[in-house]
Image 1 (tube, rainbow, N blue to C red):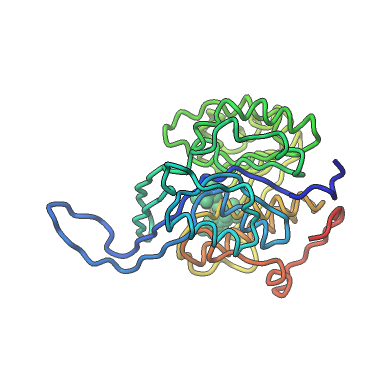
Image 2 (image 1 turned 90 degrees about the horizontal axis):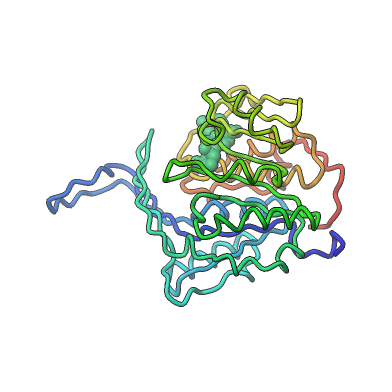
Length: 325
Ligand SMILES: Nc1ncnc2c1ncn2[C@@H]1O[C@H](COP(=O)(O)OP(=O)(O)OP(=O)(O)O)[C@@H](O)[C@H]1O
Ligand SMILES: [Mg+2]
């Protein structure tokens, strides 16, 4: 199928959940103590949802595949995705599972999360139908470890993507089991691998970012390591790129909540990459999206639209635009 006839620029499996973010005096005390907290907000969560929403706001045709529960959080999740411009035609109501929830007890420098899995891991291998690959230009795995039911599916899926000329990217996000296995085998079929620094070190089994990138890039994949305020270290074959977020313009403002910074970075980076931007431009766009999301609670509320970036003087020159938005 010709590229311009495909429905999607990018598709992902959703780790479908809603985040309840509680702030101010959030350390719980048991023995029936009732304590008053500072604030509470309900936000659409899930790395793939955050990623797909930011992609859509930049102008990519993005969609997610997955499930919501037959509950008000499911209604909320669908409404938020639709509102962001994400295609939800491949999201269905689950007959039994409730929509996943993450209760984040957020303190200025740390947070604790209580997660109810529900629909987060509801997508099964049989739901990954080849028609999906045939209808997208790019496939992004937004959270490898949380999608436990798909763990063995990704290798044949990514192989098939490569055969069909669909490009791929992988952000593992954190492994709650801290085993970090299964990722290196996928890398020969991944065009862009985008972990954060701790994840890169754990997967590579090294203690330093450059040697981790060396090892992870051995299969030819483009490795982009996110390093929070330290920025980005990227490597492809023998070429490396370094970006120091502390020196970037404009400077980072007040950080309200860091949820989703990495997922928003992925969206900015990949939107640039899919449109033929130079690596430096991809990193700059990823960083702008990440920083914008730091300014508000959750991963979605602070997202930025391409027209706003342009009005702020963001310079970006797509050179290989192959489709209209
Ligand atoms: N404090 C900060 N100052 C400046 N830039 C930041 C800061 N935190 C994050 N960023 C930007 O956001 C990008 C991604 O952040 P980070 O490295 O925290 O990703 P992550 O750990 O994958 O995030 P997530 O919690 O969403 O999974 C960084 O590479 C950087 O560009
Ligand atoms: Mg991350």
